Amino acid sequence: MSISAFTLGVFIYVLMWFIVAANGGIEHWGSIVRQSFEQVPNALNNDYLLNNGLIALAIIIIIVSIPLAMIGLAIYLPKYYAYSQTEWVLYDQISEGRYAGPLGVIRESKSLMKGYK
Image 1 (tube, rainbow, N blue to C red):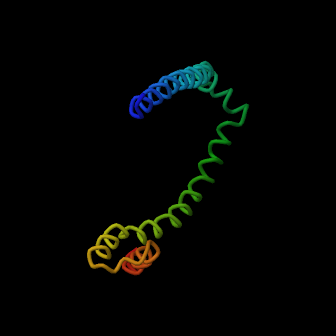
Image 2 (image 1 turned 120 degrees about the vertical axis):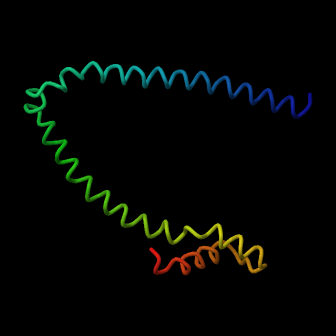
Image 3 (image 1 turned 135 degrees about the horizontal axis):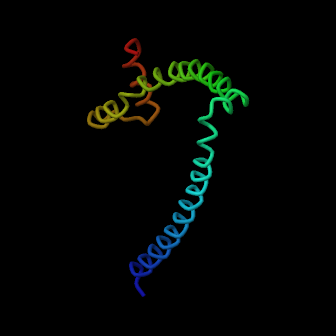
């Protein structure tokens, strides 16, 4: 038995079990979604929402999530722009024969983007 036939057999075996597992996962999540849709008529009733405080909870969640999103963007965007030129710098360093490692590429990218954020 050749290696390629063995590899193909293992691939087919794993693929078949993946299909079984994916089917089970789809059925499981489908039942959860179906059960949640059974509660939709209750959720659309204003008395139900007001008595259970769901409107207040939704407003609190929105008020808290907006500042958290702004803080997250304030952290994410400078790093994104600082590292945005790494591919170009890597190409330049390799073509010029001065590649010294990944940290050098990152440092040069950060220095190129300093002040352009």
